[in-house]
Image (tube, one colour):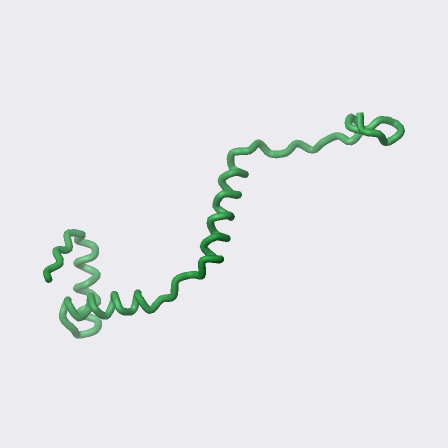
Length: 82
């Protein structure tokens, strides 16, 4: 099966890796893909936490900063909420 790589940067990376390892382009691609597949995926919990953190950051970026509330205007002389 043939693979036609049209991204020049990728082609150059494969050539550099092949020279570095002293192997063919096909072997360089095989070695690189096998190495990449050995990298463990983050657990689903980590992905969920990252997603939650992105949602929180996006929310905070769009919500105006909370203003310091003046307690003098919130409570009367007896400490009751106005």
